[in-house]
Length: 328
Image (cartoon, rainbow, N blue to C red; front, top):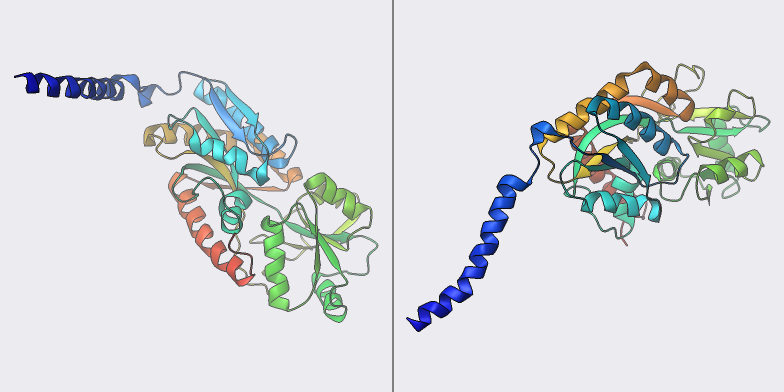
């Protein structure tokens, strides 16, 4: 009898804990059909002012009206996007913390250095809303009129020519390294930290070519010349600029910008978030906004976005291994 009392004393607290957990599970969580009843936090893992930040704010402002709750955009930069992305992965899976994701942090960085999240397991993919218009540019008074001329000059002068991207081991850098490998030429990559420094270096004549988005506003002014674009087809605003594919570079490379949340968000909440941001995406004002910032509106829903990211994650691992950049 005494032994039974001792067992009961040990077991009873655990039964109470299980009971409380069961009650919270049944009654504590919000009804997904009523979501959202509180403001939503939208994390941008980059500093304010860039295309990722501004596009997020543009979409969030419209989507908040659809959802009937404020969407508060919060910048959490650092670690090449890792700090903010990790914050998204560790949030409660209730739909109230979501955020911005792009190719560099999701499918490149995890292959080249240790990160505290697993792209394939730790996120709910909500929607892709665009791709970046990566463009290779030179100064308008440079001797190169085509990208092939630039490459042939590099072949004749190994290691002499330089090129710049917005950051080391980002999407533009990795693509250019694949071009260099395919052409078997030597180009020096000039690493900078961000769009502003890239523009300053290029316009100041400190680099021979640049590849990315930041120089797009300077093409109409006549300061720089676009030689090639990384898109599926030619861009309407630059009809004379060929795509890399047209130039013979059959490099499987997908840029993307989208919205994610932590893993485990209820599918009904995911659909509500997707539908609200899709309405924002479909608004004509977003299309007008996108062009000058080097964004090509492209929509993928939750499932197709996830499938594309996972495919690109695996493909990028193979590409980085060939370049000798995989591993940490």
